Image (cartoon, rainbow, N blue to C red):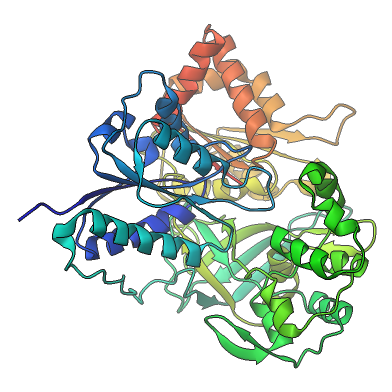
Length: 540
């Protein structure tokens, strides 16, 4: 009897989405009769690829087409000139991204091309998944299983049974209803922002979490926006439509609960351009007008597009051109040891004017304005490694401006509840100290008691020259480097586009200056921190 096919399933993701999917797929691959090994790319040596039989790679894209943090070292090694050929290895890539970004699935595309360049053979074509990924991802796995079985005739009779649902803990597909118990504005009067402390009850919801996890929230759309969309399309709320996987219902309910009616996705824009009498949209969608399209779409929602480019369509055609509504992940701001029976979130309610109309975010204003009307469907999204050290004596440095402070509030309460003796250092920033110092009383009390060893603050608009958390890091560079040399873990949470990059640049500059290193040596130092899981980021 021939041995079972050996399948290596590798993943990399900036959030926990792909890791959770990997666990499901690993079970399905085992049930299909395969010998399976799963690993985060950061834990898998590229040198082992040459000896692998079947390699499945699932990856998201970070920033401008880059690898996620826990896939960057793997990618760097794969690009090295000394990397071994992969002749005889079979592979398949499942890429995750968001079509609203220019580098959609950019890292997955590069990974797929590099493996082929090294001589590996594709089991099947790469699949690029948008935010609504489940169906495409499941179909990819089905094709992969079929191709592996075709390539290994000895397994032709082994059935490919699917994964059975555990039915125990809430999941993305089966969330639990949670009751809102608190919704408080953290900003003081006069603030330009509306940031909320939200507390949800875990009673009866079977929600289990650890500090560092995220909470997935399934929102409903704003009723006023639903009405606006119905008005601009001249459709009736009670028009019958069918929602795949759910069933028949009224159009108004479908728009409120099941579809993304805010973001104008590329496929949606193409449909509108094909129907409208105004040719300007079709011109904007040309390949050489991407910059113009991006500028025109800034702040625009689907209703704005339809106001400018009206079309006639049926209810079925409207839902057919929309993507499904997706949950929003929020870093958990509480500690299971200190806040029993509750999960806390820190939510910035998105409200703005796009020059034509007032607009707002979906999930943030759902929680801020409408969640007290009923139960909030939620699930826990486990974090791969973004957790405080198991050893409470290890010092930690946390950089969390704005709502990025959320997980670090949880870290501090958890370490305090457990009696951790390690030093704690928090960098926090926002616009104004008077109105935007989130959890200021708690954090100040922790500092005054000595538990929070250092609290460095950067309020950007309180002086002529803007000051940010990375500036405070540089000011305290010598002390920060000493903490790193003492074994401190370094955490960052918040905006990926600018803040996380600026903090990373500052960290490397601090190591170079105060460690007396070249830029290359400082980069290696920081890379070793990341490899040892002493430099971790929860960025979005």
